[in-house]
Amino acid sequence: MDPLFIFAFILMLLLFKLPNVEDDNYIRHKLGLFMGIFLFSFALQILKKLRSNCQMRTQKLLYNALKFATAGILGYSIFTDLVHMESTKGFFEDLEFSTKRKVLMISLIVSSFIALVEVTELVLLDDRNNCGTVTVNDKN
Image (cartoon, rainbow, N blue to C red; front, side, top):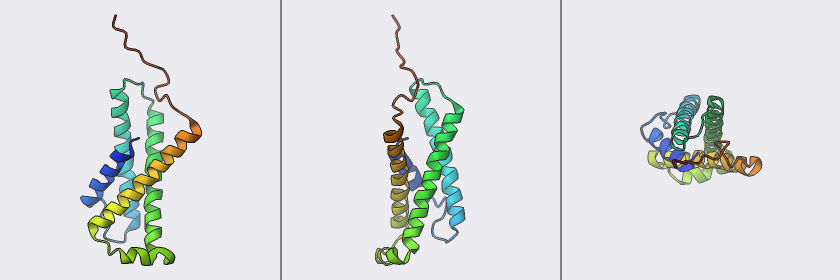
């Protein structure tokens, strides 16, 4: 998964107020982000597999989409914890969040957490070949 695409998607999603992060309905925010990241990462994986002519296993695609959506929700929870924790609340109050600054901060934290999960998985699991086989285009 490309964290840059995830960052751009989350940024656009929040700029269009899907979900509207100006209210305090955090459950709706998390559900909206979860569904958005899940669907986007699932579609992005399908496009990548089609482009590279890899075989697709639906179970693996769903698992990866679920993993990234869950990591995104954990990233959003970290943001809300940082905003409301007594030890970090003063720092965030000093920033004087405008809507765009808040959206940018959420997008950065969520996409960074997703990237951290992906890098950790790459380091620990060493899954270099996503297709399972090397494809050679021999047309001669």
